[in-house]
Length: 332
Image (tube, rainbow, N blue to C red; front, side, top):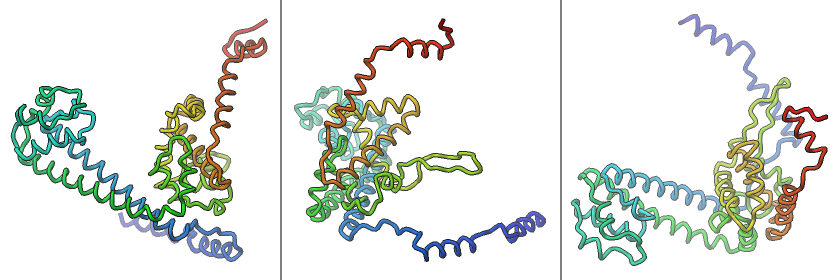
């Protein structure tokens, strides 16, 4: 054991550590202006970014509380989620609060006044779904989860009220971002808080996509290509753009994103395809904010029409022969 420790210490001091040399080299290139500064948005954008990131944390906490509450319902054999669309809707929430207050099985007469008119399920079905085995411990836990959930909703509302005054100077940029398919109000505000409104700080759209962590790496050493996965940058904006990309491929008004997604998915899979769509959306946002122009649907409609026309083209003789030869047939 002592011999191994000695060998490890010798390796450390055997000239293989280059931290000092690297520091000197970085200092030298910094003196010549070869080290670029980090992206630093103006003060109001930084304040907006701080509030929107905190809001994202609160939304994540709210989702965690909903999962904990649903887990307690499952443990207690209360399957109201199979009957109603939203467990935290007005009808189901009022019924669950009644159950938690009684700590006992409720009756049909107590449930019926709480049901809304547009509810498709009958009172008998609702009563059958809540006939579980609720213990005192699970009851206490669910009360805490429900109170914390309501508190988080109030905190999110307060954060959104604090965000509104900061958005007044950037209303035009937010309206431009909202024209992009798959992007809604909160998403547009969060994107603006992350990248700002001035696109001149980025060299081009590729630079912005690389900063957001949506560009594959170019990792090659000694002629061997290593990992080309996207970087870990853009911890906040990258997941948001992926959500917007999932919405964009479902938007029937802009079919080109769906066509592009399907074409990439056949060759590269879902994950790489959705990252490619997210990068397309960020590139669109860069060009729109740079030129102060809304999203142009006509360009993508023309691309979609060209895609359909190319699929409808008849196979000519030369292409048919090449296709048969690629399948192993000999054409004379």
